[in-house]
Length: 440
Image 1: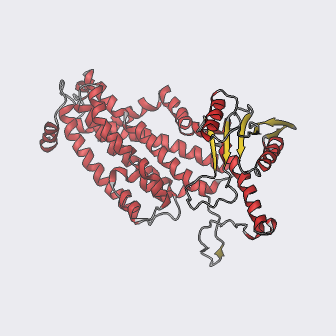
Image 2 (image 1 turned 90 degrees about the vertical axis):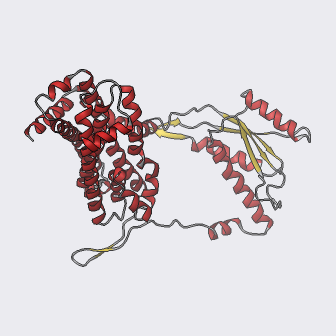
């Protein structure tokens, strides 16, 4: 065992004492949060060029309401005040009424479309004659239509919908001899509070239910899953390249002269487990400090930190052993990449179902799936991070199943490593690999 720990310490120090390790520590949070950070930094970096919108109001009653709403928005709604100075952060919407010159609707639509293509206007709106009455029994019929050449820019569409519908509702209420203000108050909706459960502490005092932080219930499990995925990738995947490089350069032949194959493999595994645990601990500690400093300490899932590190270590052992087996069995990087593809798909599988797990963490689907060893580390961590959590027997069972699976993977990898590390040339076939596993 002493030789195993010597190899482990050598692998660990070789990884953490490099500039690459420091760069990785810095770049990983940038990669994980860079998209969100850039969105925050660039939230007011928009094109403020005026957007001209042609309106064909075939009712003859709604254009004025839309024009008034646009004027109010352009005067008050598109500016922010920074150090006493108003700064425009959104474009002005300049609505212009267009009157059809003929009854040919297709010609009208074509003419307005050509104006959009020539950038004379940004888009145009058609309000049908019966938009206020709308007696057509077909619910799929559109009483209003918005045309543009920028389908991804939907701010105009979302803004223009409200003032037109408000004007339509007011006119409908007047037709029905209803007071618009009274109807508005009578139909005003209340927002439903989203609370947890009432609890009783050890002293027998009943505590009030707390407001549920819906954003935290999404971000926290997502962050834990991504952190575990990144640490597994950093801890396990380099083992393929390490073993393959030593094999191709005949370094492994020298090493095996003083260290038995299984001890060499375990040393490499334990070294990379240490690297992944170091990364995970640094990021968890850094996240805790940042969250508590920002005043959101209740969002940090301190109750699952130990479970997170346990599952992370087992995941690196499991996937790392398989990657070591791949590196020892193949002869070049191209062959290794072909074999690694299905393993990588297994690693990313939790990302396909994580949102379903977050929504219903106690469902039968979530429980069963989180007890399947290859995906247990990420999915069990996600379930633990979402209220109400999980019973202790489930993560304990998950650890037991992971230990069994990890033991099997390490055993299989050890069999393949003993033979494959010294073989050169063509990679073994599936049948040959099974023979190595069976006979050692």
